[in-house]
Image (cartoon, rainbow, N blue to C red):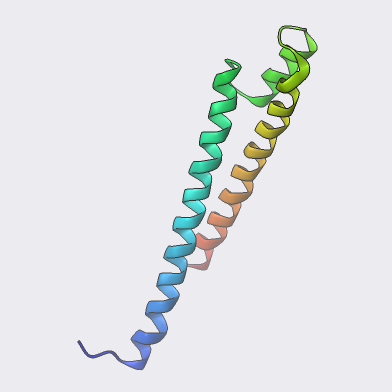
Length: 92
């Protein structure tokens, strides 16, 4: 297969975007797994439910509060990663 100078410029660019996209999607999936693990551990649908259960005394503060903070972090990471993904789409 013969390549032109134009192809050599385009192919790495596409590969870069594809690689970046796959990495971001993989990270989103990973963060969702961590978040879901914590939520399932406490039978909650969202991190704020864990905080409410701590405040009501339904669950012990330790380690639930640390898990709550981690869940918030995972949730924010997912939002940030989705923004990055949106930026990639706009570049296309």
